[in-house]
Image (cartoon, rainbow, N blue to C red):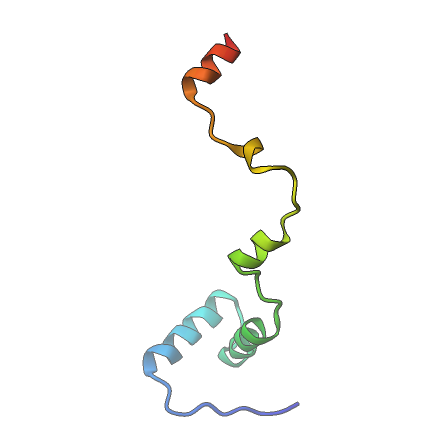
Length: 77
């Protein structure tokens, strides 16, 4: 395994890392590894555009037109 040294960190970052590590019941070093893994190795979420592009074509635009509330009342009555 490789080693990584991070220099010149703002003390607020170090303190936040220690507090987060305490909440997760692990050392600051283990928390640092977990954060790096989460940020760099976990699959990224799809962008909104990718999610839209992945939607199947399920009809024509007219199928999804807004219906007037009065028209809905007539249908339901």
